[in-house]
Image 1 (cartoon, helix red, strand yellow):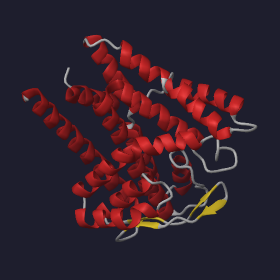
Image 2 (cartoon, rainbow, N blue to C red):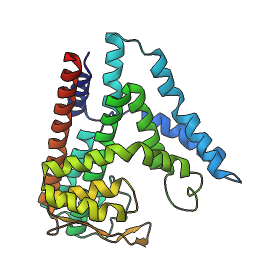
Image 3 (cartoon, helix red, strand yellow):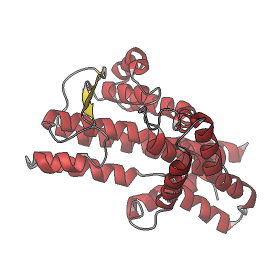
Length: 303
């Protein structure tokens, strides 16, 4: 089965069913990661322990898939399932649009509560502007993490590649905090995630530019992308904000501590309608990537 068809079918499954509500494999992986963290994250040599934990947790399954997955219809069905489980396009859209609906109904308390499920910052005291900003930032950043980076690694390295990316990304989400508890132990997970997102994030950024205001989006990426504290989120969010002609970023509270963050993008302040526009940008980017994968697939077949 052609790679393009596998990708399309995985997105169809995601659009129809969304994320698993029960028994998602990543939940089990997260429980295993928590067990390792509690066992190893103390004492000396925390960076080495963290590195060994990452290697032990993320490598066995991709290696098994790479060597044991048969090249037949069953193997292709497993490939579809792997990509489907790794992407979260419908979940990202649904969660963000719930917040937009809450804002439309002027229910700020419910908007803050639902926003807290998709961002790590404090949401209890956010006004409508800051809620809209945080939601759009989540949509743009997770467009890469939950959609385009998994798709990139699947096309590049098949089901083993997308599984490896999703496991690394999950460990980064769990351990990649720059606080006392995870600064050393989570270092390897954070660096691995940075490396695996290096190319996909920039492909996502240029895609946002192409499908929005290219001049402003590209300018914001070049001028602002490297100022962000995350080397991959910066290009993605700055290009997306510029492409939409809005301003994101700015200071935010995390666990009661004010985090100084630069501004991203250029233009006006966002509102709830821009949540819909951000999701539309994600949808157009999905179509663009699937189209390019199809063209590449046809070109390889004809060569």
